[in-house]
Image (cartoon, rainbow, N blue to C red; front, side, top):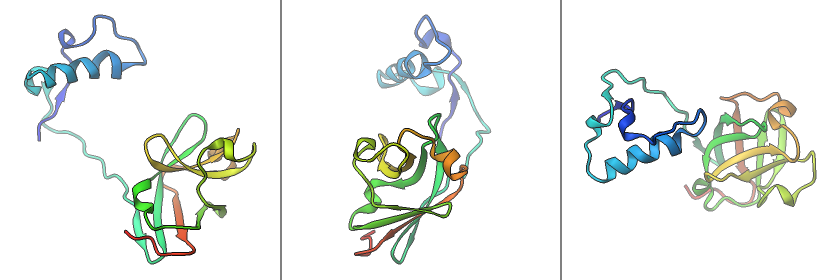
Amino acid sequence: MEFVHLNKPKYWLPKISNTFHGHDIFAPTGAYLASGIPLRKLGTPITDPVRLDLTQPEKTDNGWLAHVTVIDIFGNLTTDLPREALVGCHDVLIKVRNHEIEGIIKSYGYSSGGDLIAVVDSEDYIEVAVVDGDAAKTLDAQVGDIVELISKADLCSK
């Protein structure tokens, strides 16, 4: 596996913002890469990358044990449990920090302000949120906390 520090501005957009590197650096260098420029030409090689041990959800007899992986600026709790893991899971109960959530709803608008809910986020992972609120503060949650999903009617198929 090859890693490089994308530090060659000739492959970036001419003006770089402080907040939009996906647009200003990553997209242009990705386009160069797709056009056939070798990765090693796009930046300085990294020979000692830091690899992170990322959490993975664990299958249980009646559901999943997942982990809070991200708390966004709104206090929403993203987990490492993808929607695809829920195939066959019906009538679910989600437990997090001594609180229980019945089911996964389609979007925030299907519940009332202040309600603790579970949704599938824009990246297709299970997210715990408080409608018009801050789940991290409400639950005193932190990255790494366990989120348990229990399928009450069926066993999850995966």
